[in-house]
Image 1 (cartoon, rainbow, N blue to C red):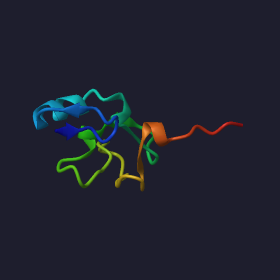
Image 2 (cartoon, rainbow, N blue to C red; image 1 turned 45 degrees about the vertical axis):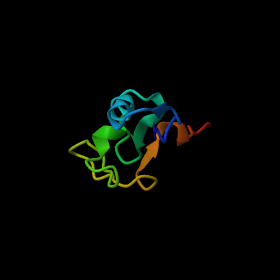
Image 3 (cartoon, rainbow, N blue to C red; image 1 turned 135 degrees about the vertical axis):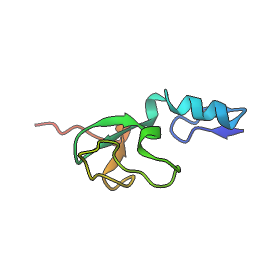
Length: 77
């Protein structure tokens, strides 16, 4: 079994999991450097090292500059 680490949904094959990651609503990332939102797949080539896919941005690293959208809290004034 292959399980999505974002939503805990399980899949029979690794391919099914990879296809799911493209549309997983809980898998979206937010870059605090440039403010862009993007899919997790767009931010990594190997699943270990993450960087913002925006060519003009230097944001990198999960929990350093990149965060899951669900973990980002909006500031209230």
